[in-house]
Length: 154
Image (tube, rainbow, N blue to C red; front, side, top):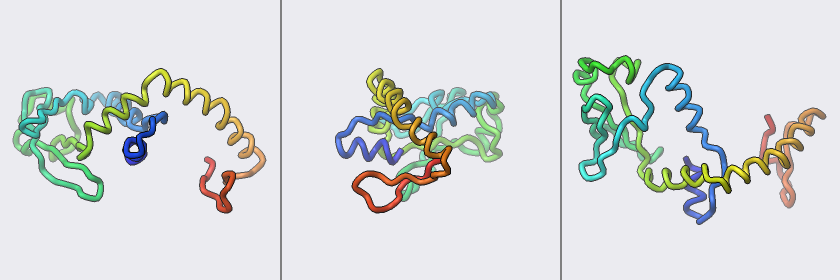
């Protein structure tokens, strides 16, 4: 999220893969609702779960710049869709970034045809050279114009 928002702040196009998709796949494999199943109501600042229950703001995380939304524990415990929603005994929580609208816009841009083309180009040009250097036991890269090692190749 930080990388996407840093690109947004500098008016750059964010052509990088979103790591969030892996988490969405894990939830789908466990048979749980994704965050997209919950609808956000901006006027009243709450989420509506698939069962129709309200998730209200609970805790603000200033360092992470996010807000937690949750329904009361008793409401989640009595919900008929609980098995599809969460495995947490306290109930389901949704995290919303304070700049969520911008983040959604940049993530959508990262899925554009131009972004996908750039990712394929990067894979073709850069990843191959990283793999070759790793084969020769080089595990760090020194970028041109820099006197220090900045990136660890894994």
